[in-house]
Image (cartoon, rainbow over all chains, first blue to last red; front, side, top):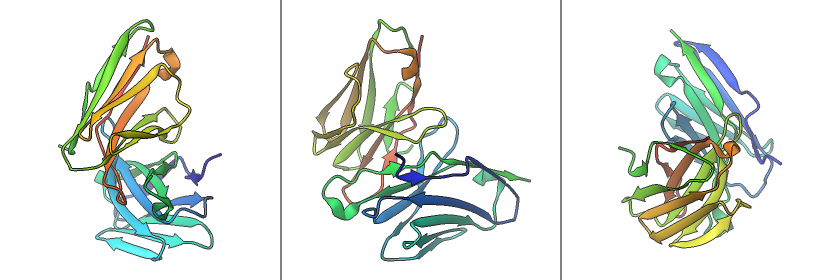
Length: 115
Length: 111
């Protein structure tokens, strides 16, 4: 059973517009959430994170929103650029659950930003 | 340079071969991980090593054998693999309480 779900396998957006990538989770023990970006032939790279004590975290063009009651988070990219085209993975962990800080990943969403 | 180096980048092996994947980090991290990425599937956690001790083995077949000789190195020994084991194998490391740093992965093809 998937604990982290990214229901949209792909998303296509025009350059300059907003990209919104969504992620849902089922495990209420998760309290730390991350987004990773992956280009072909490369490993995922960390993009932005949010702790469950917050509902928003912003870093430049990237903002992550967390809705704990809905067990939902989203990544907003504004404005979108062609170089943002990549696979975006949502990940979650239960940091307070002990020394094992393993991440559980979603399947990823392929974002294509068209010039 | 990501800080986590995986070798080789590409590997083609027969089902009767024995090979090893190598991962190295010099970030001062104390946990290392092997993940498998197959097409249209989430990243699947295979093994977790924390302070050089294996703390998790997610029902991985015995044809995959991890080894962590020290906190900077992690190996994945492969033998008698099946074609369905073809995938991207990713190594990651972390300091407890923080997110991972991934390597670039090894693209494995079993023929």
